[in-house]
Image 1 (cartoon, rainbow, N blue to C red):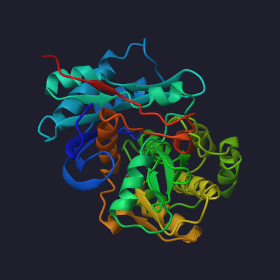
Image 2 (image 1 turned 180 degrees about the vertical axis):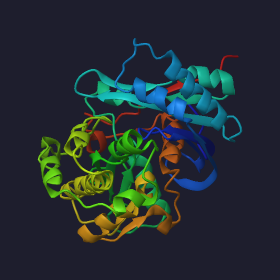
Image 3 (image 1 turned 60 degrees about the horizontal axis):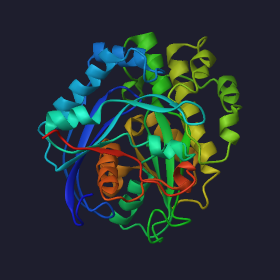
Length: 364
């Protein structure tokens, strides 16, 4: 275990949007945030993205050598020049089935530790799933620290619009994230992943930049209504999703024009959040949005119109919405290395407080 006190750690996150690797340094003791350091981004090439996309849904034992090589090469390039005594390595989620086969993040933390000659914390989700949890979302403990860092005095919420959307309701008045009533977190539904898949299939581009295509389209109300009939939206949280659990979205818009399909998928992502807001214990004073989806003004406008609380990108309070997830895994790495919990019953549904993660020390 690491000694008490502040430490610089680096988090690395490769999300289900399959765009690239975010890396960010954080000054923390695993409880408080003291400052933010350097950050970086290493984009996947079209060929790398295609290899990773082909590996989605696969489990350990499948032929994943080429995909793992992509993950390791990209992370080594992103992390090699980053300062920090400890690395939090999330890996690439390929499959997530917490009630069945478990959860699978591709990547070998020991190999990274040996190559970088620094300790690496990884495999954050397995222990949570083994104890009956969903294994996701894992950023809520960091969201609690962020709420404290910005001086929040009333319940608020963080919304991450990545490949999948997830929300964390935070009561910063509680003494810690593991305290009853401090947090509630769950996946809201699909966010960027199906829209990105649509753009790749129809336009040959990885995403709808600035919502330019969706802005010219019209929402198909019938498709949206069918989408909202999915049983997931009536399931009580905590709950989580795999990237492709809502693959039906592409079927629901297959007869629509490109613009109408994009607009309808934006409405689906926003409506999923609206459904999720009904489960929050108390109306948040504000909803702070991070992840790539906050760059889509169509989704953001839909949320702002529909919700009865301010909807703002996290930059409004001085945080970095592109790096919040990477920072979260730096924070969680410190907690794992110090034997502190990283999830609790109200974040993942795990049966007890659990500190997920494996610490790999470099050889020699």
